[in-house]
Length: 271
Image (tube, rainbow, N blue to C red; front, side):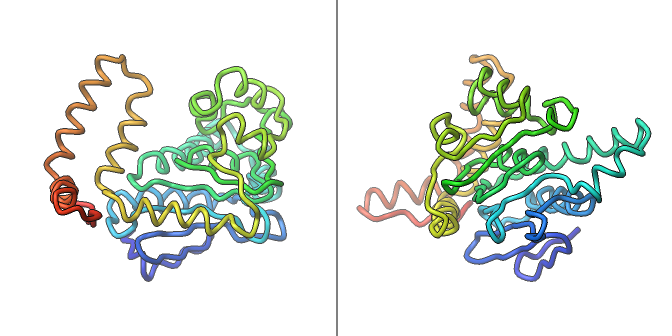
């Protein structure tokens, strides 16, 4: 796939691009924006391709008509899964996990703007983002347990405890209960809760701030956050020393220095 962000027209989700910021959103509002086999795969391929698209500097994964994502479509996904053999099921679960790998693997920071329902795989998409903003009535549910499945889906047992702690993650994953916006902000799951009419503007404000920053260095930060999960402290410090030395060779680092000397605000270019 060769992706030009200015002309890109996905089949299974919405895409807008302006001033270095891309906006993604599912668009089946009558069903609270569920995922299908096709939208899973297209989103996976899209986030994989972002590794090579320097023009896109930040992503907002938004909501549509009052909801973020209700998870896998009952008729298009859940029904067919009941009929699959183990080989087919494993192919599916690996494909859905690949979406999270692609989101974590792309250098662009991703901001989830969560309005209304964020359930199942929809909760996972928000969880896998780098920032999460929500409206006061947002409801997040890792509801796999409630449909007879384990909570260990698409990296939930790895990522969620790192966001909110082991005990709180255990509660959500063992029960599938809904997490409200206020509680989610208190637990550290949501970065910020804002009024519904302000959600998109707040998410875009952060995205534009990130897009105007040292985007190469931002990508390094995201990479180190990923890599250092299973490193010892000594290994992590050495990895950060090497990463920072690379960033010190960028033009953005020199631009920041010269701007400081001139008492001006640096204008970063991402190189």
